[in-house]
Length: 159
Image 1 (spheres, rainbow, N blue to C red):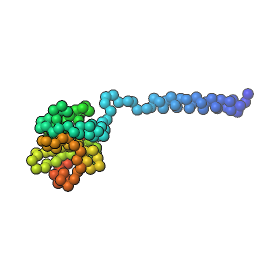
Image 2 (image 1 turned 60 degrees about the horizontal axis):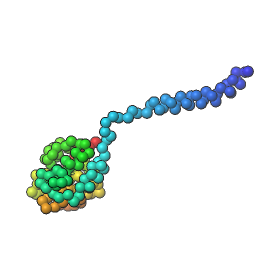
Image 3 (image 1 turned 45 degrees about the vertical axis):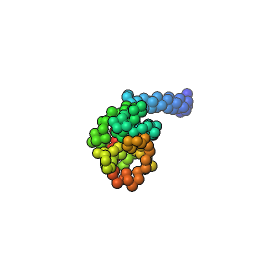
């Protein structure tokens, strides 16, 4: 048998073997899966917050059964999703990582009259969830001219 005949016969087998080896090695090159929690999306925070609309406002409140104040609502939502944050709006403002442009799940901070600091959770589309004041319930509000006038900035505790 000539060398040319041997080459013609072995070439397809060599290609199949080489392709099989490449596929096997490509599987080994996949990035390893990270242990621990996956990165948290702000959309999960926003979704969790909207589920709490209708819960009564209660000064110092941080539970569905008792009610929420503004920072208690934010604290509760983050805690439910495994994120440890400060309890008061002032501490949340101090410790949150500042962001220039709010994304859903980010915190919006305000300093309106009668408040030291007020906080809510941004939903996107110019709306946020917050616990407004005594006698009211957790609600979705627009970022209207009133809230824009007292806006301090946005912050984030999620990745």
